[in-house]
Image 1 (cartoon, rainbow, N blue to C red):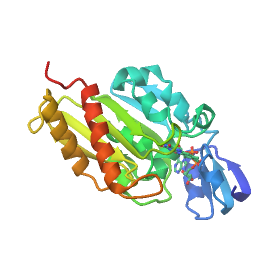
Image 2 (image 1 turned 90 degrees about the vertical axis):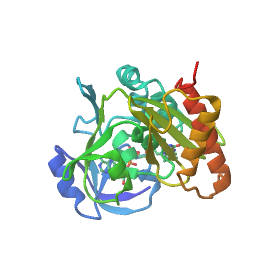
Image 3 (image 1 turned 45 degrees about the vertical axis):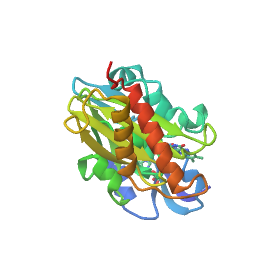
Length: 264
Ligand SMILES: Cc1cc2nc3c(=O)[nH]c(=O)nc-3n(C[C@H](O)[C@H](O)[C@H](O)COP(=O)(O)OP(=O)(O)OC[C@H]3O[C@@H](n4cnc5c(N)ncnc54)[C@H](O)[C@@H]3O)c2cc1C
């Protein structure tokens, strides 16, 4: 567990940002990852007083406050109705209910963890990160960027008609994924994200002019092959690179079938 000289429950994002500019200070969100570190902090910056745990739906988008817990998002009916029920598949294997009642969306996105189900899922939707200093940036850009001292205020997901489908493969149910895969189905084409390779998830796009909406079983297999070939894979304690690539193809094939893209 880390130690801190001072604990500050901030009253605004301005105050949080100001304090977060010092490297010895650190934002504390759900504290599920941070508590595993042994750092000596000067100030622990608590965001829990900012009423940033909301999920707001407007006509054009969903706004998810940085302090929204993974569990609240997993159980949100309006979100599932808009983007499909697989949000619970994406989040539901992360450790356990009590854990997900604390871990936050902001902490998960900031972490850009190489094993992240959260990042893999959101990358196939039209997702943006609303940062205190840098403003609204696409998640794909944020995911590829280096860690800095900006503060995530909220995540924005545009309602552009996309549905997200999600699968992960784990050695045991609540372990980190060996591989995670998501497909976002849009009116013009499909977005594919593969994560836990074990590297930060990335997203690619395949237009319907290349791979049409309705696919034969052979075409599904070749699209899944194309997707799995588009990413690099590594080896760690959980699996080898070749195995990960194979599972990425299998999961993508399953996801494509789940989206109902097969020719009748
Ligand atoms: C044992 C364990 C198993 C896990 N398994 C999985 C898994 O299988 N799949 C998965 O996707 N995830 C997994 N996670 C990650 C987890 O889901 C959360 O992403 C993680 O705990 C961070 O969220 P938090 O709210 O706890 O953040 P914290 O631990 O409070 O903070 C994490 C980092 O984010 C920074 N931060 C937090 N909020 C903000 C903000 N608003 N703006 C800027 N910086 C911020 C903090 O300063 C800190 O550096 C696991 C974590 C643990 C500890």
